[in-house]
Structures are given as C-alpha cells and as structure tokens.
Amino acid sequence: MYNYLLASLRLTIGLGLLGSVVWQVTDRIANGIFRPFEYFAYFSIVTAIFAGLFLITTGFGLLLKIEDTKWVEIARLSFAVALIVVGVVYHALLADVANDVRDGDYAWPVLPNEIIHTLSLIHI
Image (cartoon, rainbow, N blue to C red; front, side, top):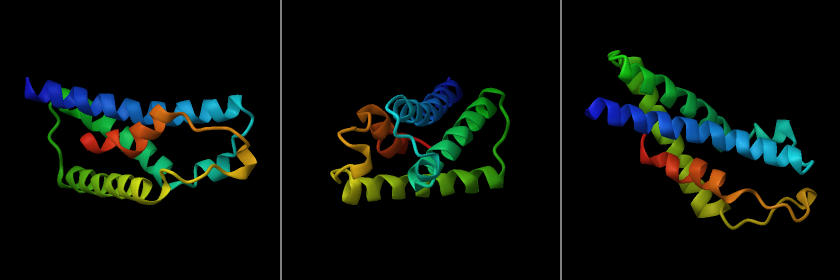
C-alpha cells in the first residue's frame, strides 16, 4: 500500500512539473511572447523538466517493484537540493519582481509558478 501511495505522489508531482512547463510555454505562445532560448535558460525550468522526468520514471519503477540503485538515490538527492535552491531563490528574491518590459502587461500564470517553485518541494 505504501509503495502505491508513494508512486502516486511521485507520478502526480512529476506530471505536475512537466504540465506546468507545458502550460507556461503554451500560454506564452498564445500571447505571442515566447522566447525559447530565454525560457529554457531558467534554472527552475530545466530543473522542473528533469525532476519531473525523474519522478515519473521512479514512480513507475516503484510500481514495478524495481529496486533503487545507489545512482538513483544520488540523483534523488541532487534533484532535492536543486528544487530547494529553486524554491529558496524564487521566494527570497524573485517572487515579487516586476515583469520584463518586453512582456507588456502579461502576467505569468500563477498555478504553474506555484507548482514549479513551491509544491514540487513536497516530495522528490
């Protein structure tokens, strides 16, 4: 039972991270302000993509009863540290920063930002 709950949590957060990135990209494309080289240069975005893929992979591994190796545990620790850095830097320095002047009055969608910068810290 515990393994299914933990796998569900990993899959949910992993899909949430990837879905948040997709949501932000499609929203910026719809508003005509998507700059891919700039967007994918953000540490938080790259971390969200790779941590999301990692969580989905380890979630399925847990369902299939695949034992975690030492390298998987090292990767989990690395992603946990990266997500902590993302959350701390975002909330300490960037949360209330004004938008880029090139974006005009565009406001980032709130929920994807919260998932990437806050809720992803629930579990790695």
